[in-house]
Amino acid sequence: MYNKLKRCLECVREKTDFVPEVALILGSGLGDFADGIQVVDTVDYSDIEGFPVSTVKGHKGRFVFGYVEKTPVVIMQGRVHYYEGYDMKDVVLPTRLMGMMGAKKLILTNASGGCNPDFQVGDLMMITDHITTAVPSPLIGPNIDELGTRFPDMSEVYSKRLRSIIRDCAKECSIKLQEGVYVQFTGPNFETPAEIRLAQIWGGDTVGMSTACEAMAANHMGMEVCGISCITNMAAGISKFALTHEEVQETADKVADVFKALISKVIVRM
Ligand code: HPA
Image (cartoon, rainbow, N blue to C red):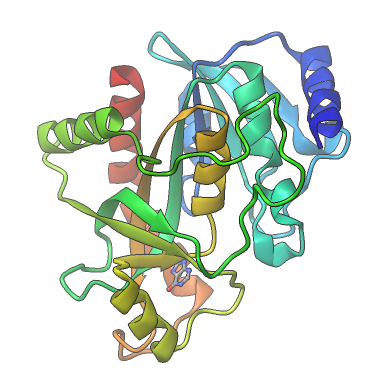
């Protein structure tokens, strides 16, 4: 795996020598955030040897390199999910690659289903911690010693320092911000009401199909991580209605401008 990562890095370096400080993974509805920054370079995933390419409709597949004010960033426009059939190690390959490009900090974003009944559709939630009991760890298999230790500590995956910055930025922009625990399920199916009750018993506030695995891989290699989730729907059994991808997309699009404003502010501040 490390050799594969090094080969991916070589492919990127053939196209650009840009060194990012912050890495950003864009979730549903946020895809065009990258079009609003000062773009320096782009690299299509398909030009990177061995790189997992998303099969989800409407997901662009490329790295965008550029500046948000003075901060050099690399943005993933499109990510792959475990449910697409990739091994968890491939799902987190892009995250590790951005770390190897030089990014010291990572912002994860996603769409998720609220299982905390106090949440409302359209709320943004800062991720304070996660539960990945329902999915395999991306760290299973031979440890990549060059990146991190065999038994990494996960007691503060989502950096306290970055959480405090996100909280301040939301307040300054008058954005309502929930906080809570994200539970990653495999997807692609939405959960059953019984699975959502389980997630609640576990202490989860929201459920989704991404993010926590990427946070783990980034934590393993020493990156400072934060995450913000858009509650696009109430989770199964809480919502009276059947869940659809269209509803997720629709809410994500509605909240996108507020979400993008918050992320811009956070990048400059972190
Ligand atoms: N469950 C899982 N993933 C999701 C959901 C959900 O309800 N909403 C958006 N992504």
